[in-house]
Amino acid sequence: MVRGVLENSLPPEMVDQVFEDNRQRSYTRQLLFSTIVNILGAIVFRTRTSIRTSCKLFKGELNSSLRAVYDKINHTETGVCAALVAKAWQRMAAVIDTLGTARAPLFPGYQTRIVDGNHPAATEHRIKPLRKLAGGALPGVGVVVLDWERELFHSVELSEDAYTQERKLALEVIGRIEAGQIWIGDRNFCTSAILWQIENVGARFLVRRHKTNVRFENVGREQLVGQSATGPVHEQQVLIHDDHGNRMKARLVRVQLASPTRDGSECLELLTNLPKRFGAVRISEAYHRRWEIETGFAHLEKMFDSEIEELGHPRAALFAFCLSLIAWNSVSVVKAAMRKVHGREKVDADVSMYYLTLLIVQGSQAIRLSEATIDWAGKFTMMTPRQLAKYLCRLCGHQDLESLQKNKRGPKKPAPNR
Image (cartoon, rainbow, N blue to C red; front, side, top):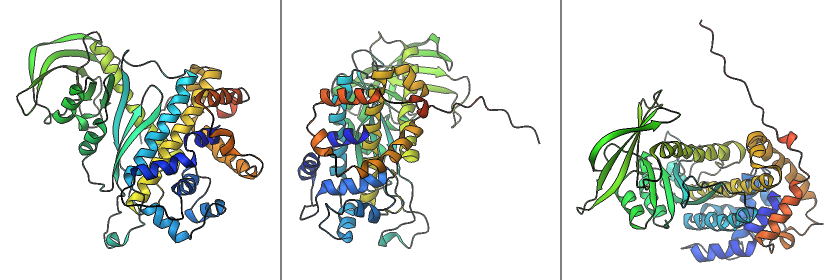
């Protein structure tokens, strides 16, 4: 099923066209970009351990040297990688919409987008200018957007400079925002420029307040409006200022936490421009959904090879990270089909992402043996979203969910006193 989703979402002609539409200085001479995606994708899915072994897997498509493959990977521009993620999301989202298994929106009438930054880990493999430094070289930084309803990574903005401020990349991401969306982010994305940009296009925001980056004045008194799972909830009207004397009406939601956070905060302050029909308690509970993008990052690191240690070049590392986002999305499409057949509650409660990914990696070996007898590209590339959704549901009927059962552990026992 995953192989079919990837063939349908990343047909070679589309991948090469994405490269041509978004490249700046790169070019195609003999080695196609779609071939590079296949070579690096095999490593991301852990079906191969290195670029050399992956090249042997696709030797029939290669008409270049191994050095040329490395050069192509190391010089793939970040704009091409980001465009590939966005294009794959567009095709996978159509399949999930056809299945009808997207989650109900957090706030009716608004599509939820969760934004967060990701820093790939340092690597000991260095490009020449960094080999004399004591610390490991950081390969870059990315700001990722999660489509919460469909459970897909929506888009990404990348920088080869690992010390680039995430807010700068967030401005590029939010520049593509549309009306009818709500964006949820941590306090790192709470700046006047970001909030006013969201307001000006008719969208909504829900961010944790930063103590210094947003200037506002209180209007009226703070009121206790309810009780959430983490503590009492207070609300107050505020006016957010910009640098030109304009003022924007917003709401300040403060949650008094029963236990402090990791950084010692005893209360959670949220800024939002959602209308009054959405209560403050509901807003505070919706903000906790922001952690789902952190869970997705953890899955990328543990189940896919999103941070390939052998790739010391920033562009190569970010390229692999983008392919891991697409890999995670392909598994999400398969899980959406499983929810259609077996029910959302059963799949969400019982199916382990770890065992599902392990099954995919093991099954890929059998798929390689059938390459000569199955025309994967011809079978899946031209499928419409409706045809692919119907095919996935038919295969889901043969699944044994017991083999994918989560191993749920009991409550942790306190350590005995020494």
